[in-house]
Image (cartoon, rainbow, N blue to C red; front, top):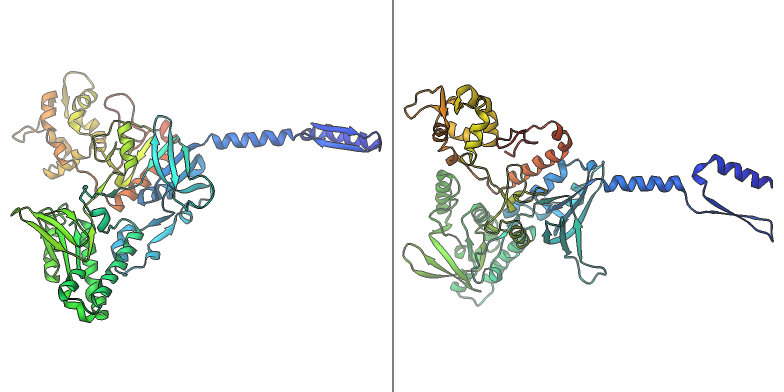
Length: 509
């Protein structure tokens, strides 16, 4: 009985064990104690689960430059983050051409994703899988694992999101040219670079086998690059150095039979760059013996020949080859294209975002890197709203002082204004209000204001699809997510011209 009294006192003084079932054994006089539950512990677990579920769910698609930069800079203490990518590593893509020729080894340009996303303040979950479909209406992504099908378990799964970050890059654009997928090499992944390196060596090994004619050897040692953009030009230069610095010493008997040809549909290679850069590259290739064929459009690729049309003459030409690298640009991935159809962007070539990297038509989805483009707003589309916001006294005219009051917000929201001012060598932005003869004006009406800014949008420029831009976008967006709550109460962006208030964040620049 003393034991029972002691136990009763213990239970009354420890509320966390208040729900115990006491059974007395009649036959033995023993005491059986069964704990049904620990109320306080259960309450604590529920509260912890609620705090976890209260976090906003962020799903990141892709582990390239944009996605990795976003993950590295994101404060995940406020978010439940999941990453989906078909590759479990980050690749330093600018060095891929060097990997093709052994200048840099593949392991030197890759880093496991899980090493990058280690965080002390929380955990980021990674899934090695490919996104198949985005359902923006239900905030869900559908994915499929590409890991060995012989392993047990399902390959298909779905993830819910509150915010979705699309940073999947782009795929090679073949322009539906027959034979390209079957016979050409590409240079988008580390595996592509390693495959090219093996093929180059195979071409040399095959050329030194006895019994071949010189014509057959020339064909095997003819390396063709289709596309005169940065990737094609850099690979051609790397291949030239690889051949003349290394391979000719290993295969001296065929050193005079090697040929490198670069085919470009435009009039010049590197035509998106400054004319001086393009001219220098063409002259350098001419000195190095690399043939540059401009104005040629490839119409098909077979197992041994490239068929193309020469624009200047209309002539049809067939070129024998040993290896072809196809680098004619990129296109949108199929599941991104399907997503664009759902949100009303089906007629566009690339996913469009606003200046804050939000996908147009989906406020909780963001597009970064090569898979998206920032659709910079034209100032002439908002010129009337800007005029009304600046005209504080509503007298129908805009004074220089009123223009100066909104000028900073205009330049932040429409960077082409400052670019136009600099291109015209105007010392002050207010000089934009001068009349056609260059005379200063104290005020302008709406028509004069439109005329003054009518040529500003000619300075709009799209951002290049480079690793630097993608990385900067990831860092920018992570900063926005980290300051979200702070900027809701203290917005840092430019004013809304069509409504009151200010934007929460500065736009991406």
